[in-house]
Amino acid sequence: MSSVLRHHVARVPSSRYARLMALYADNYWRLTRVFGPDRLAPGEYRSIVGDGLDLTLRMDERRPYTLDFTLSYLIPDPDSGRPDPSASIRLYRDARLAEVLACHGARRIEDAIGRRAGCEAIVSHRMRMNAFLGKWLEYLEERGHSRFTLRPLEEALESAPPGS
Image 1: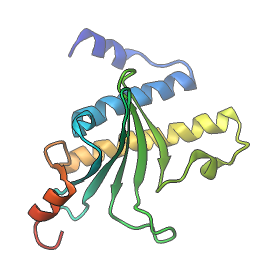
Image 2 (image 1 turned 90 degrees about the horizontal axis):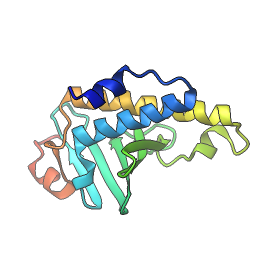
Image 3 (image 1 turned 30 degrees about the vertical axis):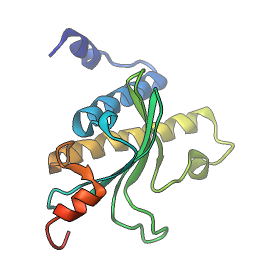
Image 4 (image 1 turned 180 degrees about the horizontal axis):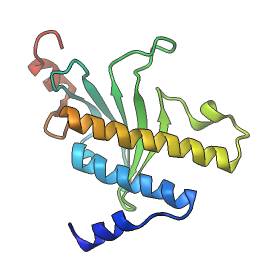
């Protein structure tokens, strides 16, 4: 383990904002290690590991310093019909941070907590969304999802076992 990483892990952020930034950094490194989104062109990708829970990564936009993409299972929410769980993510390549922009379909933060929410409510909501992403990424990695199981949608569907 490098001294930089050891220093990062040993440091305990003192404020809620610092803890939020630490979550963003942890999510960046986990996403980079597990899925390598920096190498993906815009389009839809599927990870099939044979557990019946196929994962979709949709690379929406690539800009010089950011990537916008969505991770989701193909399980429709009974109320909205949107994939659930689902997370819209912005990866900041230059700052090495990954932020969840929205969870559960395309809901924006204003839809989840209201337009007049105070700073405390916004930070709390962002903490919950980004903690969720960290736990979900850990779970996905344990299930076997990775950059090596992630294939362009057409290729994944052609090579999928029957019944997937």
